[in-house]
Image 1 (cartoon, rainbow, N blue to C red):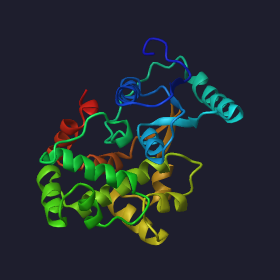
Image 2: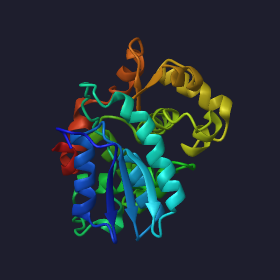
Image 3: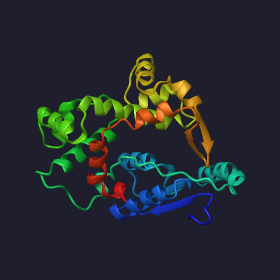
Length: 257
């Protein structure tokens, strides 16, 4: 795919397993400019969420809606063919996105702190669209709220609430890159229930309102990337501590490759 990038690459699964999903994510990291389509017979909400957060362009459940599939391919053709001869490329972003639990073949030991944090982050990602209480996250990974708070501060360098807010804002930035999604839909999709509060919070952390941030984006190889002059947006996204990033790579081996 590197020498002659296709218009799109399609991954088809009957029942996605750990290795298959890891291969898909690794392919996206290696050739970030190629849109990936995922077709699966086994479907779950967490699998669909995982797919889109792994930068899958579109997700289809068998039997495939052929009309929609052809429409997606037509859109990708129009986006990519005019730029087929371009030599530009960009480095794949490292995105923390846990493979759904049903695809895992091994489970963490009860005393493994990083594995417990992995469970907590997975729970957050799966429920990002709603209010998340620290106590319920703690319960999901077998800890008390106090133990979870200490775990986040120790392994990520930030509090639980700070991590949760950063995760909501980062996901909002990703969703805003899709021009078909309204700002209101983005607001509710990442767990905010008040558009004005979402706008103020987003602007405080990113430096732009959601609408202004969207205007700093442009299309490149069928994906949206920041234009020159929007460095402040990117710098905020990289604001996590070095220890946090190192931890992410350590307890998610596929991201460290």
